[in-house]
Image 1 (cartoon, one colour):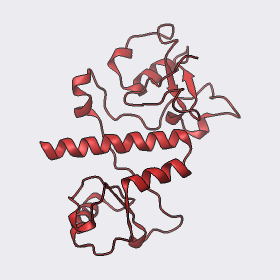
Image 2 (spheres, helix red, strand yellow):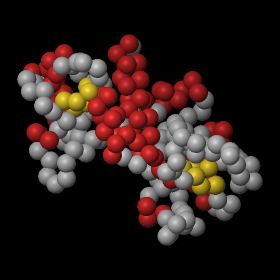
Image 3 (cartoon, one colour):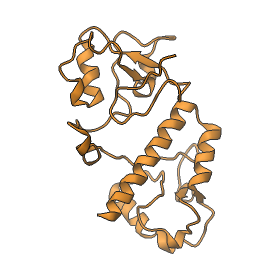
Image 4 (cartoon, helix red, strand yellow):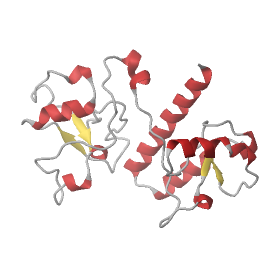
Length: 201
């Protein structure tokens, strides 16, 4: 069986690894250009539907409303989990990629500050956490409030809202569908790499 992969830049979905994810061929109508633009890849520009016949975009990039009962609607275009900028070659991919913070939903209903959970790597304690490194939160306030909240992390005494990265990933394995699980894990990996590279520079 052929291993199908997603054409969207930085999407790691493959048919062998992600059983719950569907892969859709590029359309042979005017939507083909929109799909190419959504992929954010220079190497696809100028290609026609015939040249793209073996290329696919995975279901992680389509809203639920884009589907009929089982199949993708004829008017469907990818709108979810797309890179923010166009990249021209592999040397600039890291510089141009727009990293968004991972939002971890810990409860339903109204969120209060005591519902915020932090994911820490290894055996770090809250007092030892460097700001902006290896933790993710679901704080929905504006950026300046988030920065203020992060700067106060070194005075947190209570460990009850902290879990290790390993615990978080085990929770993802246990409770999330394969496609979403893969997406979150790839986002975490990219975010950690991005944070590590910023610390070195």
